[in-house]
Image (cartoon, rainbow, N blue to C red; front, side, top):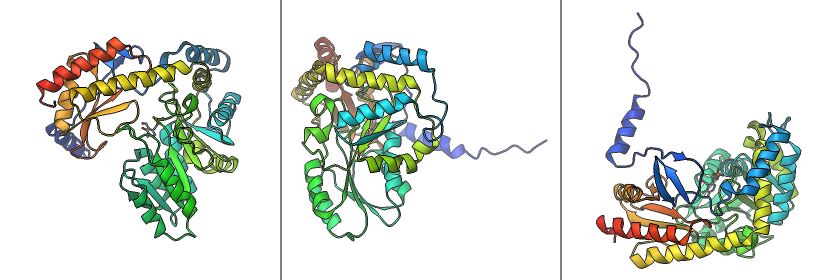
Length: 396
Ligand SMILES: Cc1ncc(COP(=O)(O)O)c(C=O)c1O
């Protein structure tokens, strides 16, 4: 009989026990039914303040019909990576539409925003190059930067003067990429984009913006923060996601024809992972139609944002420096954030608690995101629940 084998993965259970002792262990909440403003999670009907479904497009009839039609006529899968047999005409149509929408020469669509960021940063730079990155940039940028083997220089959050001081010391003959989120996903504030563009212009750096949370939210028809700040022509690489306001799945890079051709040849997720099913591309095409023909959705998103943010602030919660529909309720202690989130859930509101490593230690929070499809009654109900639970837990 073979000797009893010690479990070589035992350390994982030990780490999970540590998470439990710190109140950071999370069960996945399970959504029954559709992703909507009022939804059922874990068999409880709640006002949903946790999705990135800013415009309610996950269930929009136009996207649904486009996806169904594509499935009927084109099947359920692309069957290959883009560079072999998996480039369908609908993928090319989506890239052309996105380029028109973003006002750039070209775009390339990736499987997700994560792979768009990581695949781009890792392929355009090498070990002799430099990346100057906001300290709160998204994990996909950090992973792409590590994969590139370039030297990573982190500047304090939104501090363009510090970014400038870093760039000033770097050799001009090397490639230098300045990179920032357009909207920061945990704080809801905006990157220092105009000031960072000035630094990039002055020192000849490549400028890149991850606009995952801005696409469909900021700028004319939701064109993003580059449009919002009037920075067209000054940002070399724009990343957007199709998974949040656009309501489906995917990411894209918008920029020059040469940039996109280069990514077609070198971005590893593009080369080595199968492309979207036609239904996903079709739904995204439907979403761009909606952005252009239903401006009232973005208007409603902002009305709801103003109402809810003002309500939380009037109650005395610390909502940080948010300028977007993402409003954090910062409590500091991770266990308290999870307790607040759980108590809200018991009271009919789903707002996810977030702690380390997603945010820094001591900056734990409950994150809220309103959508265009929340009704006033739903938002008022959520504010009442926040008031009740916040007082009971001594947060306000
Ligand atoms: C700032 C930021 N960039 C990129 C991503 C990744 O986008 P996706 O969910 O499409 O992979 C996210 C979402 O989680 C994000 O918040």
